[in-house]
Amino acid sequence: MTHDPAYRQLLTLIGARSQQWLRSRIDQLPVAADLGDNFADDVTEIAVAAYICSGLRGTPVPLQQFISNRFKSRIIPNPKAGFSRGSGSADWRSARLFKGLTDVDPTPALSGASMFPADRASLVRPLEAALLAEAEEMLRTPIPEERLTDQAIDTYASVLALCYCFGMERPRFASARTYGDAFSNCLRFANWAERKGRLMPLAQMCYCLCLIDPDHDVAPMLADIISSQRPDGSFPARIGFGTADQDNSALRPTLAALVALHMAIYRRWHGSQPNLPIAA
Image 1 (cartoon, rainbow, N blue to C red):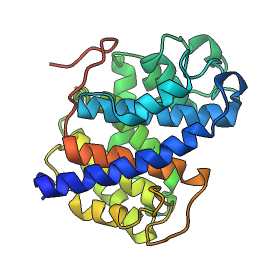
Image 2: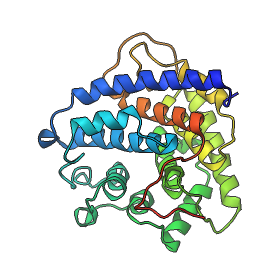
Image 3: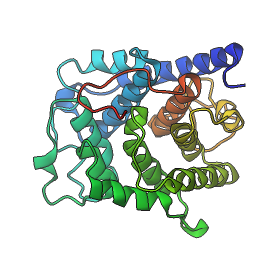
């Protein structure tokens, strides 16, 4: 079903509507010189999602053009933005932007910061053997039901995406069982998200399941996501119908949904990144 032309056209239309909502959010952002930590985090999220969508499509998506036009010189002028809080919870997003999408080296700004596997994986290309082994162990380990949260699934999805370099390469895990264990974890996380009505982790699992198996049918999962889109083009945090326009709290769910839609449409990476080696 996901390869049906009419269905692909529907997903493309839904993605285009979400990009227009994101454009309105970008237009409301301050100029680069006035970006604070909160705005810098938002721009980072948008820039990374645009990069992934463009790589999947093989050509720049409108979202990439929207953010480039708004911040012509450099996406985020201060490389310490996103690292100053020291919690590590959002560091990997800023780190992967600076290392992979700009010419800014974030390493000096990270001195003394809490470095989780996702943080370090975003800074090292190709992944060092010890770091890949640590990530592999994390991906194989089931998370108990009582510990499942949006944040736990977000971190898991981040590590998996970085191991796959967002879809550009297939990681060389030491054990072939890792792919199956990660796939099983993602299925369980997707089931949790559906039961709890959480849209963002469900969208992240659509993306991750297709990273592991590009031919996996995520149409049933996408049905819940598609039906949740608001009239203004945004996606809510919770699965379900609604008609109210949303504020900036819808940014991350909308970006996650947009990436999932692009993965469902294009299935594999079609772009290139000269700064990163492509696995054979």
